[in-house]
Image (cartoon, rainbow, N blue to C red):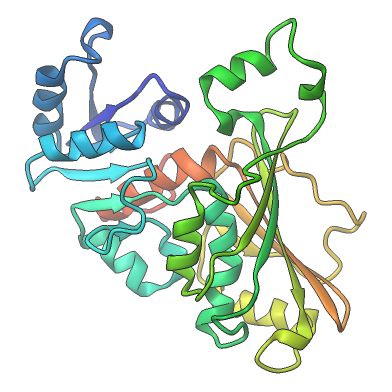
Length: 310
């Protein structure tokens, strides 16, 4: 039985990982006393008593925790701190066999950001397959539930006297400095950072990341059917990533919270001969955070990757 510790188990991601371990008998959870959560000696002891440690922490604290860990401890980091570090495996196994193998064999795995997961699910294969050139001027739009904004924002959204503008979608990251942008660019092999337009909305969890494409700027002329077929073939063996068939969604609307509570991801391709809209739907707390982290753990343990995630 493997020993597992969650450093930052009281945060949103940590709590969701705990939920996914509820019925598992193949791991022993190491728990820190509430009054010792900021005791570095106790954190160090638990990290180094574990076989696997999840880091659900701010970036600086995650870097600090890694420095505490012995090399044999296998770290799964849900922060932004190590996602572009070449010494760390990038925790999105569906992107390719090389990603899956690195996750399986590594002692250091960085879980992708939620927006970056939706983004990479579309852009990485398009660049990899030569459909989208690396210098394409990528723009991406996204809507997310408020759970991704952290505990303080959740408290405001769920409070009795919240500001009126919290009732509507709120656009942010206006300076184009969002923390997911570096991994979006690097992981997907883009020459330039994308323009990114995220909005936080009045629902708890779920996300849609949308990628508009001008077909005239692709490597050759493609239509929706060509792109859909290429993505369907790329993800044909994926358990959690599904490319939706032509005509989906049937009512013409893509809701953002349909996959809330799951580790699934759905890709949609729609549009016309000149302009396409690709959409990636996922749970920002599932495939965009805790679910992806647990999936990486399962791969590292060499067991069915869906264990605890169905």
